[in-house]
Length: 73
Image 1 (cartoon, helix red, strand yellow):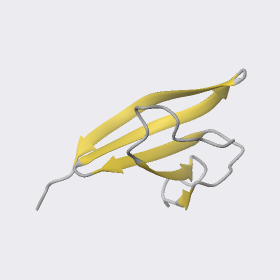
Image 2 (cartoon, rainbow, N blue to C red):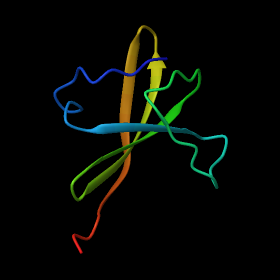
Image 3 (cartoon, helix red, strand yellow):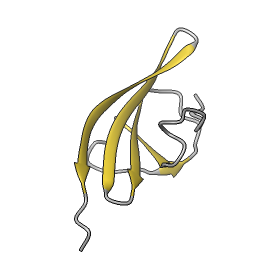
Image 4 (cartoon, one colour):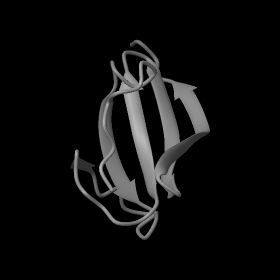
């Protein structure tokens, strides 16, 4: 499944993927094609959001799992 930065919500974020199979080890692959549910880490400046993306019919569905703010120091 490819995830594209077409949505205005996602346009300004860098995308890294890691699978749920290895929760203790973050295997990051930038813009990779993975045939399973993805946990996607979006980050820009001080905002980090963890978003789950999966296929539902012919649409890609995403839901925000959690988010936090990095300290600026």
